Length: 158
Image 1 (cartoon, one colour):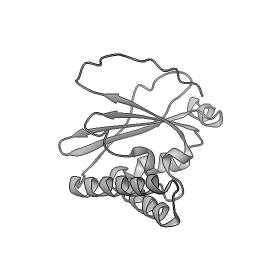
Image 2 (image 1 turned 120 degrees about the vertical axis):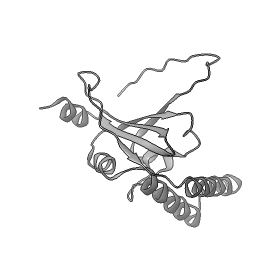
Image 3 (image 1 turned 180 degrees about the vertical axis):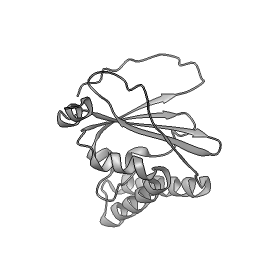
């Protein structure tokens, strides 16, 4: 049994790395093995319509603000979030990465994202079945050029 098989059966983690490069997005999705880090991480480049990403992101914010005022999420708001989340998923996640996400048995998703992509609601990407934040226990690790004022270390506990 491979490390990937062991990890997914034990509820391990799948990793999604996203960085903005040359006007597009570089996406890498892989399962974290118990034996350590992988030496090769294949990635895919996605050409992105940033105007559409920004409009969809704003729609998600509007829907969430409507839910906050009412203190509950109506069926209409949930349907809107699913549609917007599906659109973002389709725009940002390339086919091989989708296959890995849909086939994993991992219970955790670790998102490594650069500071140019933190405004995207990754947790609310909808894969056609569930929001990523409902399917996985999620965490973000952000890379930035800015010096942090304080550094917090968080332990990963599967």
